[in-house]
Length: 632
Image (cartoon, rainbow, N blue to C red; front, side, top):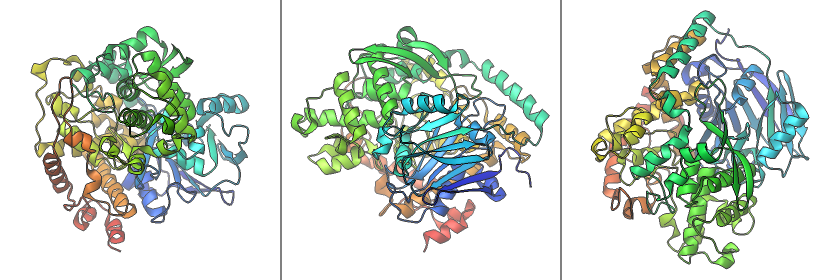
């Protein structure tokens, strides 16, 4: 049976036995879970033994692509990665753009599964049906960017390569996977999982083709999609600055995390925004596979500590280093970005951890003797010192490498009150003490505090707007920015977004054209039908995305001891401490409102009051087998 749109195979590599096997992709899994994130979620639930240590070789590493990956349509280059989370102990996934996913698919694989641990530092060589586990001694200890350059020199420029840095080798809980000299699967510590398996890199070259149900129809629809994306009103406004274009808007409406989330407004935001990148850093635009809206900005930064060529910084990095650590220039932010990329650590978690450590020093909770030196906000040398320590687990870095949840629990002295995370995953670049819908989105995200699961600030700040472009245009206009209210509608907004945004992670394509430009979802269901031959409406695709959401919640409930409502609580800073300055000065969302929001969300989800999916709900979405397991 031909699975149109898919490569049709799973590649399994048992590193303990050096055993390499190729097996057919189950048609029923493709039908019920689409691909990418859906495959990751189902396979993790089925194949990981309950209670596995996420830091050990017994954890599984899964890479998966979707049915739209590698086909002729806008930005079809996404790859999804999954494991049991080193950050939370529950469900983990992370995705990246670039070119690796299409290459893996052209090599003949929709899914790559790694088990066990290689006997020595190794890398995977995959060229179509030729798969090897090769020694990586010469690359071990090298930075992520350096390793990719070395492997391309050794293998050829046409190989697409994933790497980890020293942080992954040393099991830092927010170690990332890097690719294409600037793309990262940054969240949840996926890089640690590769490091625990002694895998430094994965190199892929694919020369095969993909079966398409209606080739002419898919080609015509793909051409139409490119044309319509370029005609969207936000196209010309979005592309020049990419995600960095959000900086001014986020600051002006008071959601820009500053000084370890003490406040939400940075006076120096114009020195670290998208315009600053264009004027002082940018060499060229840099896009992912078949992307008509390249958000990457490749540039050159000179600082007091040295110079760097780097892709970025994107908005999240600007927010967590420029705002949260108060670095005062775009050059300093870009340099910190480059340091993280080379060391192989997530800029989001690293920026939160560094901000927490500096505040601990300011409060006298951590001393200069414990840290190894004085550290302060607005100082690039302090930030880079902390980044290098945490990535190498050297000195104070051994504590910081655990992330803010574990580090604050160990340090005590009230430091947990300003350790900004949910479930153990550090908060991303939107401060939410006057944004109840976005607050709820962070709290209920299945992987921990992450904006990628639902972005609903529009409902809080400017309820009638439907795209980020509209929000940016209206930035600063108070008449167009009514304050959000804590209502049951917040849960509805969040749930809708939690079905829409992660659907793209299953389909295997970037969501930015949909979210930022308003490119309609119906186009994706049509492309899905032309490519796979399965006629599913946008609504039916969203129903599959809902199934995946309940599945990942069930995974968390199975794997995290005592999992439930309290795991969806915010840090005390965001529920008890009013914002200190800026447009939202004095605001916070008290716990009584948090409880109300969670009640409304759980009810709408069909979960019990502790936030656990009920049997009736699991059966309704086609997860009876999961319900059976949950009752054992």
